[in-house]
Length: 240
Image 1 (cartoon, one colour):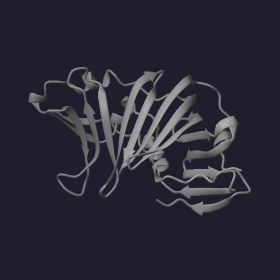
Image 2 (cartoon, helix red, strand yellow):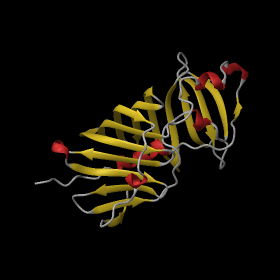
Image 3 (spheres, one colour):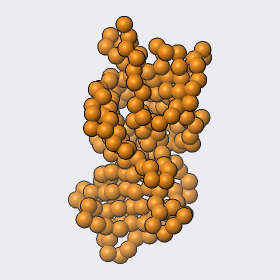
Image 4 (cartoon, one colour):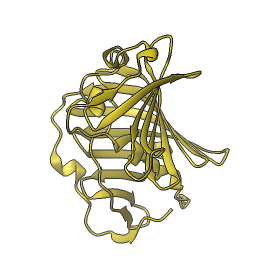
């Protein structure tokens, strides 16, 4: 008998991997005492995200310190904002799927015949140099390393993005994205393979999602229908 899978709010964190966009060229405000240039901080990042990605992965979920177990899965991505992840139970049974496209985030539960949907504006998925081709950033150093920050518009101390670079390697250690007032996502990416991070850790309000990707293939031709919403399901709002 198939056990009903509990929906963890953590899964919405996948949208944190989609907060990347391109716009105007950056205007970097760099105090002289920082002693490092923006180009030096970009050297460890891929120049642009890949056009398509197919990868297998292991997805580990923890919720407020309690591990929710790990799931094997397959990831499909098409630039700039199409993503599908299928998570499997033993013997290849599909537990659920995560689908992201221009209309938002969808959680698909085949055993229940339900799709849960949340609207949101999405852009690119993987962090690359392209991310920093937007808005004005400030650059300063502290005891943790070099901190690039994109300020908000409401107050002097408001920020919408923060990126911490290691002082020794000058590589990106961690990024924070503010998605609403008092609500932010932390993203760590390691071990790039053809512009795709092999390890990803996303955290938000006590929830963590770890992705270990392998058998990564880029540049494959993917069918657009792979990212279509399946028919015959009951549509419900995705709440968290």
